[in-house]
Image (cartoon, rainbow, N blue to C red):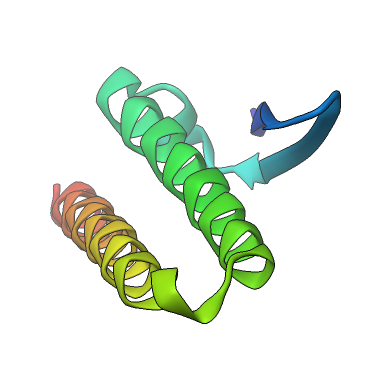
Amino acid sequence: MKRSLAIERLFTLGEFQNVKFIEELNDIPEELALDEEALEKLRYLLLLDVEISFRNYAGLKADLNTQQSLEETINYLKNEQLITLQSLTQKSEEEKEI
């Protein structure tokens, strides 16, 4: 059984302008698809991906004065993404050992 997950988020930019980001994972292996904890982590990764995409987009639109704060925010989100991926990798390796 393969499964897919997707997150769609609409961001309001003001003045009746919006931007939509969609992140999707396809062909999730059965061992992860049946593990609710793993699915929660995958959902979290998708949410982080959407946030990173939006922050990158916002950064392109912002002036150079806000770039320092944007960089720190993106680094934080990428760090969270890395920690979550490492946790999933470790869980997957533990499952293989069983």
